[in-house]
Image (cartoon, rainbow, N blue to C red; front, top):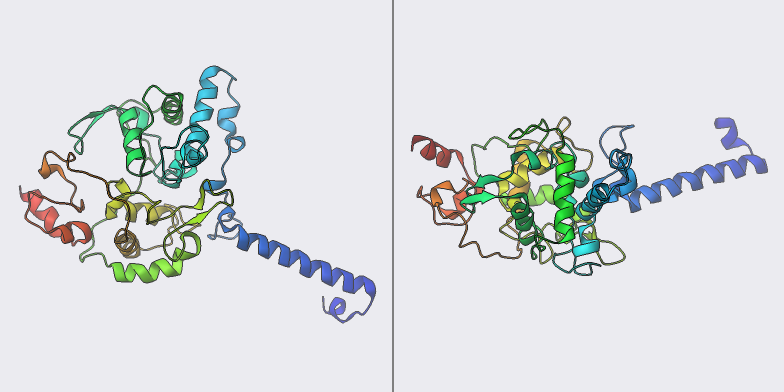
Amino acid sequence: MNNLRKSKSPTAKWINRTLIISFLGISVFILMFPAVFSSGKFGGNQLKAHTLTRQQTPAIQQTSDTDDMKLILYGKDLIANTSKYLGPKGSVMHISNGMNCQNCHLDAGTRPMGNNYSAVYSTYPRYRARSAGTETIVKRISDCFERSLNGRKPDSSSREMKAMVAYMKWVGRGVPKGRAPKGAGMTKLAYLDRAANPNTGSMLYQEKCAVCHGVKGQGIINPDGKSFIYPPLWGARSYNDGAGLYRISTFAGFVKDNMPFGASHDNPILTDEQAWDLAAFVNAQPRPHKDQRLDWKNISEKPIDFPFGPYSDGFSENQHKYGPFKPIAAVRTVK
């Protein structure tokens, strides 16, 4: 290499220029499209959720080309590219906010500990305290549209609803009824001995999250204006305050296992405390409001970190939102 640098021959100069241009080209590509690369371990580049297409799910495509398979594939596409079909500029309906289901259910609901769907078909229908009734998969999907996508539910008889249910059934194939396989859902972090701190979370957000989700949490929208490359974490086009991620225990568990890029359940980047503080900051920011007066008819069944009263335990809304949660848990255990 030293001889190459010292050489003044046209060939050596051409090689040097070529190497420099190639390096710069690769660097620019990575800077422009950071989501395609994992920032974790060397040699561990992984394709990210928002870049997935049907062509990258060979396990589905290798099956027979039946009407059932076409419905499953359509369901997968709806989960991965919800906004394309059902967003503000959707080709089928305009019933959601521009986010995709897989913004919260990573890799179209198949990533372990990425809020995946592997236990959905095996555990529904089931009783849920929020509605005080037995819910079907259709009801659960409808809730996601009304809360996480801040929109309206698809008609239960529509091809779109049937396709999403078919896809979730396919993801959970082989799972015994009533069982949840390893890697289903997301991590439940232990409660801190203190309240989660939005101010600390703000600094963490600017350091680790703002490059993708925006300084003001606005996300990064695709050039076509139909969907997001990186979803907004607050503001008018984010999930509303009735969504599951609005509970900071849910948000903290999700980011601990999956964020920032390169993180996984086995190789997290954030500490538990960082995850709690980030969750506190993000969910302290403005977002759409959902009328939840019909939720939690039995207030004693409200989750410890549900941030809206009334409560049966006497603790404040602020403590129910940020903690410390251990004193609340202790009272409930005694009861």
